[in-house]
Length: 158
Image (cartoon, rainbow, N blue to C red; front, side, top):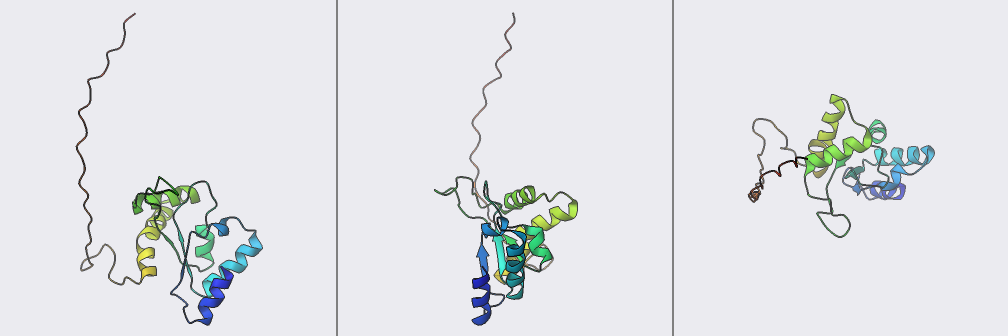
């Protein structure tokens, strides 16, 4: 990632590069993390996390404190890599919050921001957010009706 940061600066791409997953940032020692976070912040490279399962993940709060832009993304939409992806960004915010110990109200707001506002900023979307005059996108998915439930089984009497 430090090489990516150096190349982004050399190519004039500061602020236009994002690294997906960045699992390694959750598995390196403090010195390597510090050098890498500093390089990422200097080159304005964003880090996307999806709140992965049983693997290391980037330490969101430490990256933000270091000045790195962090946002949430979703991939593996029920594919061979993971059957748990579904594209639900609110669920991604929950998973990131859960994995990172984001518990206070302000932490929950941050988790939502990672999946919403921060992601839009990294994509360069300027007219985004819940406010008057903003673009309103909605995706509606038809829901199949639930099958009728069988009546409960009575308890056996002895």
